[in-house]
Amino acid sequence: MTDKLKMAELTSEEARQYLNKDAVILLPMGSLEDQGTHAPMGDYLGAECVALDIARAARAEGVATFVAPPIPFGGSDYFGSSHGGIAISQPTLTALIDDMIASLARHGLTKVLIINGHGGNVTAINEVTQKYRKSHGMLVFSMYLWQISYELLKDILGPEKAAASSGHGGDPLTSIGLHYYPDILRMDLKQAPPKGQKFMGMDVAGFAAIKYEGARITGPIEALETAPHGTWGGDPVNCSAETGKALSDRLVKIGAGFIRDHVSKGFGA
Image (cartoon, rainbow, N blue to C red; front, side):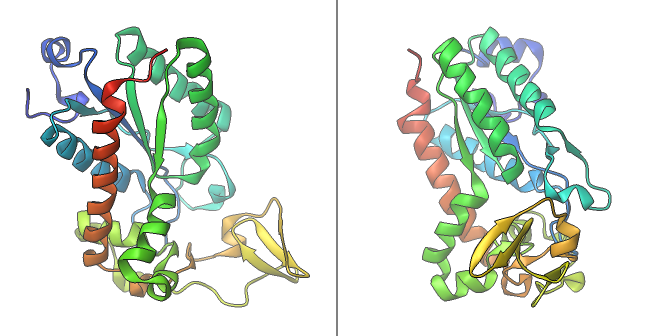
C-alpha cells in the first residue's frame, strides 16, 4: 500500500493499482465564509485535516482509505454577506456532488464517506445520497463534523464549559484550527459574540432567526445583520489547542471505526 493518502497525489498507474473495489474514499466538504474575525474563512481546511487523520487511522485498521480533493465552497445560505466569501447555489452544489460520486461509481469506487464541515451542504448531500441509493443501491453516509462535535464537547469539557465555548466562531472550529493550523489563526483579532442583538427592532435568536413571545422564527436575514463579527453563542476566548486535539481524537476514532465496521464491508444491494 502506498503512503499517499490524497487521491490527487496518486499517479494514474498508482490509481489503477490502489483505487480498487476495496478502497474507501473520503470526500471532505466545507465552506468559504466568515468564521469569526480571528479564524480562516475556509472551514473546509478543518474538514480535510480530520479526513486525513481518519484515513490514517482507518489504514491502521487495515482498510485502504483515500481522501478526495475537498469541495471548498459551501451551499449558499445566510452567510452570503461574508466579505470575500464564495458560496455556490444549492442546485450547483447538488450537481457537483452528484458528478463526483458518479465519477467514483463509474470505476467501481462505491465505498464513499462524506466528511462535511458546513450546515449549508446538508440539503445537497441528502438529495444526492438519496438518489444514489435508489439508482445504484449505494449507501453513502455523511459525518457532519461540527454537529457531532457539539455533543462530544459536552463530554470532553463538561456541559457548562462546552456551552461557554460552543457556537459559530467558537468551538468546535476554533479549537480544531488551534490544533491543526495555529499559525493562520489570529486570536488577537477575536471578538466575543454579540449580546442583545436586534434586527429591525426584534430580538435576534441566531443566524437568520428572531424570537417573539418565546418562539424562534426564521427569515431571510443575512449573517452580517445578526452576528456582525461572525460569532454567535460560544466565545472563542474559551477555545484551545488542547480541546481541538481531544475533539479531533474522538472524531477520528468514530470515523475510522465506522469505516472499519461498516463502510469497508460495503452497502451495495
